[in-house]
Length: 408
Ligand code: AMP
Image 1 (cartoon, rainbow, N blue to C red):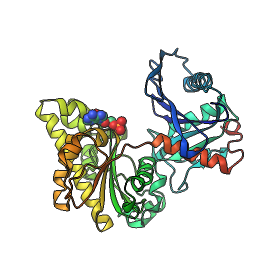
Image 2 (image 1 turned 90 degrees about the vertical axis):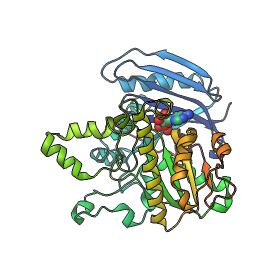
Image 3 (image 1 turned 45 degrees about the vertical axis):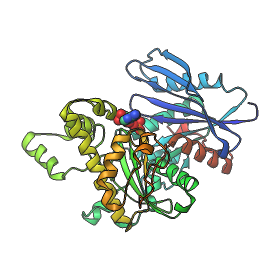
Image 4 (image 1 turned 180 degrees about the horizontal axis):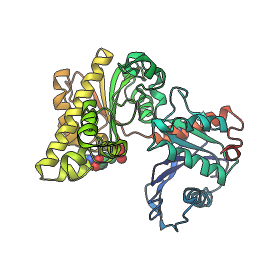
């Protein structure tokens, strides 16, 4: 496909690097031509890729390189992609970056100064931000001329009123940045764009979006802008998740520290890796496995999850002074009819009623004809959002990523 631009989208985690390649003449006709990941970075790196129709393109174990492994993996990836671009030109890379702090309310072209600002936010997201930034540096090292753009999980929530962003703690701490930021912003932004395309009458509606995946949160949005969300200072707050507890009385932490000698590292492990669906079921963090299990602990974990989601949805409706529509998205939200049914049941008093057949069939609109609140299932697409932002920014700026390596 000659004369077409390609954009690499990177979502770098602690041991994996998910990627997509989008092609298109403009953001309206972007197509994900390749998606894939390198998993097991630091242990047994495995490269997998699929084409636009999700057919396997590659699956291969990569040699470990020790120091600089991430850079080596990115170098491999870009060479592999370059050989498959079919005449298209790789014009930029867009990264998912978890934290943009209060400074970045929109995607930003990466420069040395921006990287320094993002580095300063590492303490706010120590488990994610360093990996996001490492991928940016590694890519800059391998391809110094490739413009790079950072798209933030926090940015979408910058439109919230102050009472949604503020903890009731002394002002000095708030001023230091101890406040609610919210996450999954790229997913919510995508849904905010999609919903009025599906139902134009909802363009200025009050909507609660339930992003239910391994990490889960909910967002209250009005006219496509974030008003409130269930996650706060970190991605721990809100509803129970795969391995995170969601809302937890902070007194529990004081108890664990004082009575059981927990330190910060142990608390981190407990809250990020051992709680949530896994902690309650003692079996799995995977909703599918729990729904398939006969173990009563699995049923309790699912019930606790649905209880948390319904409670947050109602709280967010209150935060907006009402509710006009409900949306389910992400792994569980898109694929789990029993979870949607249970959450809807718990929100019946708000006027939510599902059409059982439509819900089972994963229709776009799953509410019953008489439901006061229309309910939608909309597959999210954070990668498309990143590609769209990246190409948008690129079209506005001639050269956006000078000297990243030299500054690193
Ligand atoms: P995500 O983080 O968005 O990829 O979502 C991952 C979660 O979605 C895991 O808990 C999966 O078990 C869940 N999931 C994916 N497919 C299904 C399904 N068909 N039924 C129930 N849960 C699913």
